[in-house]
Amino acid sequence: MTTVATPAEVFHALADAVPRLVLGDRSQLDRLVALYAEHTDVRHPFAPFPAEPLRTRDDLRRHFGAATVATDGVESFAAVGRTVHATADPEVVIGEFRYVGHAHAHADADAHADADDFDVACIFVLRVRDGQIVESRDYTDAVGFARAFGRLDELAAALAA
Image 1: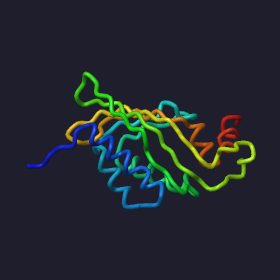
Image 2: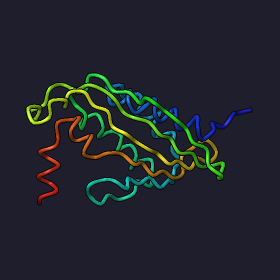
Image 3: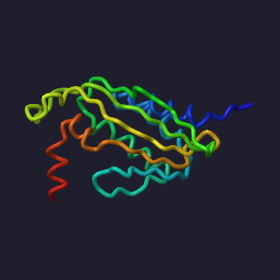
């Protein structure tokens, strides 16, 4: 008999795998993609630019595969302070946590003295069916991530364009 992961267990597996991938463990890519159903609906409502929903595992593979490039120079990265909130719907949980870590000094570090250490608040609202994510809303601080990864100038230029 196979045990199906609960929504809370899926959230923790996601929170464990993302930092490992960011730190260079490419084996986490398959693990992350497998947490999602073949057909899913993942959105990032706080993204600074309109983004297409991620609807397939191929979309997710590209999304997570880009994480190691976008986070080059990160020395430590972890999902901490995790709290899982149950909802009236047994398929839905709200995972509240922070990504914390340390990155190499960035060119814009003079303007942001604490740019090397980061602490970015996140909330994921997950719908998990049969042990896989079928829907997710990932609320993350895009400016906080841009600051953490030395991309504030890039974000500001893109927003100004």
